[in-house]
Image (cartoon, rainbow, N blue to C red; front, side, top):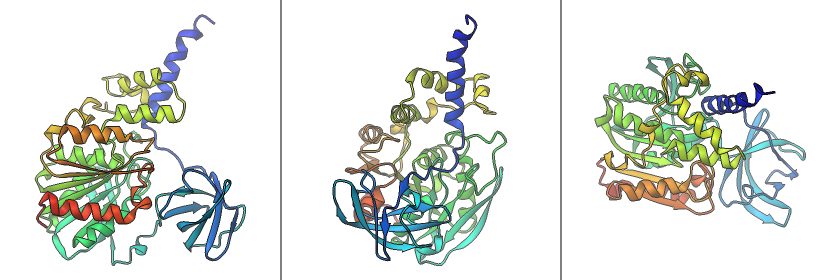
Amino acid sequence: MLTTIPLLPVAVTIYAARRIVSIPGASKNDLTVLSASTTTVTFPKTRRTSLPGEFGFRFPGGEAHIGGVVHHDNATVVRTLVEASKPLVAGLKGRWSGIISTDPSKIDSPYTEVIVPAATGSLPAWLFPGEKSSVWALHVHGHASDRTQPLRGIYSAQKQGLTSLVISYRNDGASTKAADSACHLGDTEWEDLAAAMEFAAGCGARKIIVYGWSMGAMIALLALERSKYRDLISGLVLVSPVLDWRQVLAANAVRSSFPQWPLKLATFAIGAPILHKIAGLDTQVEMNRMNWIARAREIQVPVLVLHGTEDDSSPFAASRQFQEANPSCVTLVAFPRTGHTQEWNVDRSRWESAVEEWYRMAGIEL
């Protein structure tokens, strides 16, 4: 018993460290269809299912595009059923999603599947040609997601005439796994965005706008700092951005009722020489270099931040601090009542008009 007690905090710290850098499996199907017709679907009433806008419903073997609220009472919400790959029936279990569709052809624009060469291997990407072949938008998804997540940003890029490249990166299920099969929180993943920037430059890109979603924002900021093609980046559009990992990890610990003390020890460990190996990392993660609130003044290109005020994964307060630290470069647009990466879903019109206005106000020559 005496030897067990001191081992407990060590075990909990190792568990926390490994959780931080692990690649999550599939999300749980925790939402049940109560009833459905060809035009509507009824769900239990929750904060998510009650939100205005359009969303996705993912279920085993299929997906559905869910439209606005038609009716609600104390227990249920009836919403428009825009489209479903298979009929929805009572009792069907699935999950709510900001991803409207996983099919890039639903963008209703020609695209091709291309391969981006990178040090880790081949990175599949979707290329949507635009009127401006010399100005590209690179769309980067977040942690525990894939390249279907940022498809929502294609519409605004198309409106500006940009050529869009929706990339994948190591460990996301479409690309090659890293040697340690671990997430480095952007500290190595930025290299895959840099490879996509090189690919774009080789195809004639002379200016690049990076749309970064969640951890994709961190990847974009690190590429802006480190890539040899960083001078091509004319601006960043950051959606529910990860700007400081310590704040993000603390917020997620609160959400999951995980104690803060092992989290702090784990965060220290993954950024320390030798200790990072307890998390299964082959290199340490530079946590201090990934605090963009502290480093905000280093950014010299226009940045647009689109962020929901009720994001319990990547705190809205971090975006506010980021904007206040560099108001000449950073524009923040807040979306009330909105959770993580669901700003477009709740108010698509405002999302896209904010991007359009930012292009004009920021003076980005396209």
